[in-house]
Length: 403
Image (cartoon, rainbow, N blue to C red; front, side, top):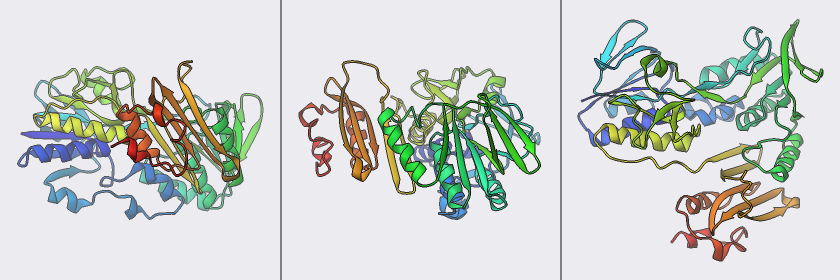
């Protein structure tokens, strides 16, 4: 059997592992536009901050691919998929046949509709090692930077650029930080902590245009305010890379539509990771991509595993500020009980969301102890009603509830 995987991120790599486990003698080929072997994308802000070197964020080196008999094709762009003849063609016109194909195409940075964002020099996004190296060079010649977008990546990147000695201004569309990961009270606490490490914020701000004034970038907001800096970093979310699938006739919505087995509408073609849309949801997080990759790879090699979804979970770690948010923390369901513990002197804020005795959401800001175990309780739908008054106490052993 010949297996082809397009994409060398966590979904594609986990799929290759799963295939190799089930099919020791199978031909496995991975094609990627990347210049590097598989690395941890969530660690790019650490690389930007010079907290780690490039080699430290790599998960697998060339030796790993050789050892597992996985053929890795770097710097390769797939131009066409011929579903009838089960063949892919690269831009250099070389082609390869497959029995099963996985689309793990990942995602790209979103560029908001801001005048000049595509044409003005000195506007960057952060999605790859190459991006980090380019931004680092620019930062070495700069004193100020404006970040468009105050999400997780924006805050982590802002912290990294601050560590390089730059003055950082963050422009955020929403009127508070991380509205998808925090409630209003948590956002206020986080903003104060981020301001304490030097970041400045324009909240509820809409960007209108970017212009040049010598070596200075001028960001004009829709309310008329102007922000000047040496360069601009855009961190306004991601979008699935669906163009190749669209051109192939594979069913797409916002992402490539995949069923519980991670199959697309085309026989023998699967999708996983940031590009996949499962039951109307695109997760865009590492744990979901990892699990989808395992299931896709296993099923490609004859398995019958089902993807049942992933509890949404995101983390932020900057300058001693730790945040973990999981599940549904934005619910307006009046039957959801909320349990909260706040310690202003220690800058900690913890909140649980409980429905019918089951944990459905959680926020841990400043103290993330037991956050992993809380995720397990949520995933396993453990009844926590008996312990809800004690569960957030620092010395409470959550593991007893998982036994």
